[in-house]
Length: 499
Ligand code: FRU
Image 1 (cartoon, rainbow, N blue to C red):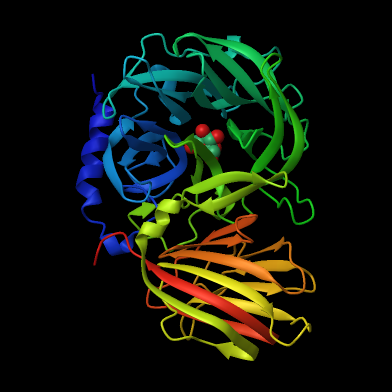
Image 2 (cartoon, rainbow, N blue to C red):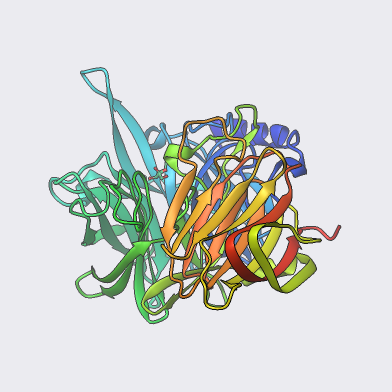
């Protein structure tokens, strides 16, 4: 039975979505149907289509009582909105249906697991959350919450751990047909941990182990865990809150963490061999992965971060986008990310330049402009072995505005800078990252959409992501060098419809 709360949300989104013009949305990045979007949820392949649910507050472009929005796609680039899937309409989730995941049941139904949030008033006038794990079963459009909800509550977490921080279940189906699920929790020491649960049928769940304890190493609490196999290794991803910076690897605030190592099925423990950030830019959080029918692991994330959310002007009908879906691989013990190969099907109007020298000044090239662009750049010194001081690629540019990615080879620092993107907020606008480069050589692939830039460095060894809401008329691209840089450039427009 669909509740009044869900019916209201569905009616609202259907009415108000129509008021948003196609050109006021990103071209190929997923954006909220209407109102606010944060984490991707229930990212899955079900009955021939990719399903993407998301943390959703349809009624205004701010976070509020969480619903689950819903959309489907055949290629992860063209999305069709479906009616909202979940609304906070039960006693155990009355204050929000928080993040979770989806699997297909053997009988063909789709099972969603999400965190139900109930805010309990305290004697001092404050509130404390009660977070529990809940199920809903459906056919790809309509979902029925299960009678036995919540299926996991404070009885199912280790002694002394927090019931106020127990969330974001990521389920997966094991080869033997059973199910596993990882969720985050706050340990007795106040820091995050990932818990593992097992189920024979997807409906009855038992605590198995603490997969990994943070012990205040990476931030405080962790959010949105994920665990999967990739290129012969096990990978655990989560989003730590309240981090302190560590060199150029981790920055202040909420970040993302990737651990590569081995997961011991017997003990349910993760043994870490390597750790790194997932995205070195500003706007990236709470990623979720899927295994595609052809065996690829694809990741997408909320293309935003809590401290920098809502940088744009206040009169928008939607807020929140997902990153471009990224294919993951492990090379030299590191996580690599590249845009999904399906993106190449959107490429139009190839323009190529070989061996262009930019020396002590700015160059623009015929046919290299636009705000929906795939641009591949190879840099090397333009003056024998003498390495230049600085190179900058400027985009979303006009006489007033630009956003830039710049490279200082002597420091091996790549910087993303949206200070001149038109933002009027006193938030972070720049981020630096240490990149691998020898003799001034660097490969950069810029994926530009109307409101974002994703910079893939050295064939996906690192990625830096930002959003910017610069007027769309600012569509110039230019190249600057202090010293001499030689570059090869290939540029395409990225267009979802045959225009
Ligand atoms: C992460 C997060 C999750 C939670 C959701 C609430 O961004 O805080 O931990 O489930 O957002 O919207």
